[in-house]
Image 1 (tube, rainbow, N blue to C red):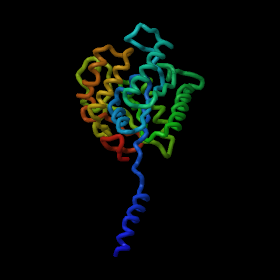
Image 2: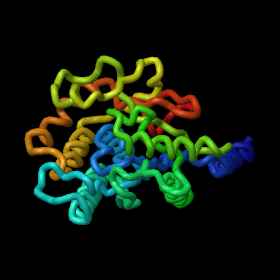
Image 3: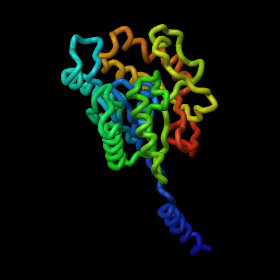
Image 4: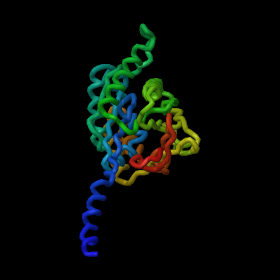
Length: 266
């Protein structure tokens, strides 16, 4: 009996050594068209990063066509400013360095020879980022592009097409907004934001107060896009309406459900 008792701790040690290690937090890659697009899912990214996930944000363009809160003309000066804002927002959310692909703002759908050459180059660049980052979860715009912006729609389509070609692929989530959750704010309703039936939004990523604060800090980075009043109001308004039940996602290629990006059921 004594011999048996002496062996028990050794057996326990062997079992612990052979037990499967705890799964690592996921690697999350968010792919959007312009700096500030990340705002629509900002609390979810901040929550994942704060809890240990590896988060990176890719911007297909530097948003060089528009900086309405400045006197800058479209071109390199806006690109430089908005690239700084993108890096600022990524830091505020706890993500790694922003990845800027520097395609022309508003030019992703240009007709070339062959017609889809620009989109093919974009897919190649995104594929290269995915090969390096090896994400478990990819987040991008859905076919609605949020409020129909052509660049948004094209980036989402290129990402979705790229992953649909793969037998083994990361989980793809489209950013979405639940029916009935848009606040009755004229500036928001005038943009024509698309909404989705709740039954399709099987992922609703929860977050906490620090994540809302991080989202607000990220929005504050985008001073070229929003006036001070809008920068201060956007996150509280979305937090009380669009994000009230968690940041909504629509799984695109494979089923998924859950309220935590770090523990999604697939």
